[in-house]
Image 1: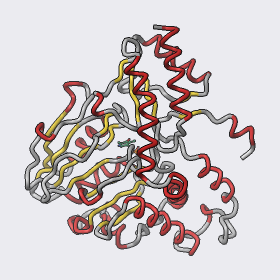
Image 2: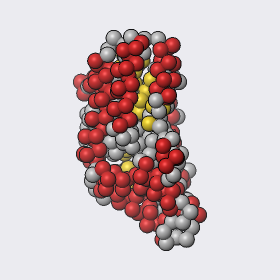
Image 3: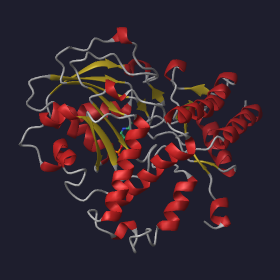
Image 4: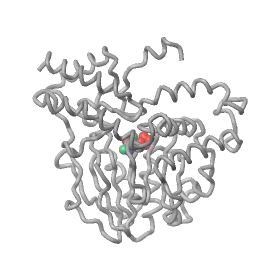
Length: 370
Ligand SMILES: *Cc1c(COP(=O)(O)O)cnc(C)c1O
């Protein structure tokens, strides 16, 4: 990449699509016109040819080793984003089951998932954090999962509110635990054997938009009715190595490079978690030390490693904050349109210099405007 192009790059706090590791972008650029050995761009070759088969197999095996994933699970590369999973999960695991699916609601994405699931069958919201404006996660004594539920669904990190579960919710062994991990996938090690199904769209923490990773315990692959549209049937994708139809080849290729970066450059998910804790602490420390000026949205025990959400004393100051931050190369922090405020997303690919620079800016801004 030319020096001028990299020099213009800002600290990108976008919530998604979001920052990618610079080294990954540089490799993609180097290989864009001619993927080694293929004589063409990755975008221009058959998904069944050797070049792409090697790419998708490497992406899968790198993710499997990062997650320590056993062969009891299928790992699928799908399209349709997280939103399609809102429907695909109940279509496979709830439709015609005679059971009820139970949901824990800790923010906006969970709510959307419930609305879609209701079209497929009986849904019970076991816990809803709306009374406190989605600023916390429930503790195990706040809900009781039925032994015969079709599944228990939760969103491990609510991207809009900046609220994250520190660990998995309590769930009986007889009930598949299902997680929307779209915005915290790969941010820390995952005890995958606790899950029935876990999915993540790539464009927050794992790659570009266009591919969604779904990890499905193999026994659950058999639950989908024969009547489902073929694309919605998990076992079709599992049987075909995510090649039931043409997979999103370019996003899979970039996601594979991000996984390799995590494994080889970062050193795996424990090392990544350590960095994410350091990065988020820089910002939460400022919220705590300047609590008369900044108001953090999430309760301390539910603070997200990935999305740091807060407000300033009034809208004018918020607008001023965003404008002055942008002048300092601290970009894309406007909170989601549904909740307002400021949201600094500090996904895996954000280098520590980003939150470090932002923390200094925040202290300075509070001093001048408080
Ligand atoms: C972004 C996001 C979604 C929606 O993803 P799409 O790919 O746009 O469907 C769902 N859940 C969470 C937690 C998200 O962060």
